[in-house]
Image 1 (cartoon, rainbow, N blue to C red):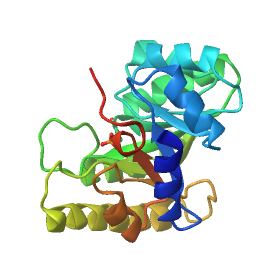
Image 2: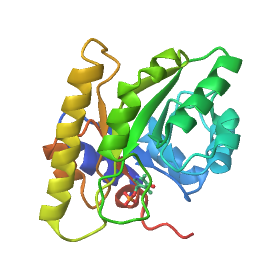
Image 3: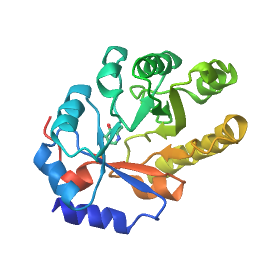
Length: 221
Ligand SMILES: *Cc1c(COP(=O)(O)O)cnc(C)c1O
């Protein structure tokens, strides 16, 4: 099942778009099945859960942290995390840098933008993000690498609404790229799209889709 679902999703993706298989709340056995099908990039939203899985599963898995990250937990994932998707404040970026310095590593990060209508989702507003980048202070943080942007659309059946939000994030990505990262090849990821909206996300330039339930089935919390 899992293997077939992965093949199905991959068959619909342009070659340059990568699939993050969101395995949160699913056991190691499910990840192993995906791994046997060739999947190597997995997304988790809880530090403890991801770390336990990292410790017991094959070491060539690329672990992406997609949840809301608390400063005091950065140190547990910094040594092995491949990409942190949800940097939603300058403070958090400095905290990641601090932990990365301690272990002499550079940690890859995405800035999370709030594009949804819901109040509850985390992330910078576009103005906050511009302000942060314009201050140039972030350039002193030598142990974090800003690789792009991440966003979640409103959880709705209104496709037009979703498209509008992905379109605006794509435009903002182009603006940020040309204003602050024009000569930085690392800045190239646009993480958007989940099980119910990844087709729309890909149409608007997503490079990383984060798909969980479509691959692993419903989660039991
Ligand atoms: C859980 C989660 C996903 C995956 O959601 P599905 O609807 O199961 O595909 C993607 N992104 C984030 C940030 C998540 O927390």
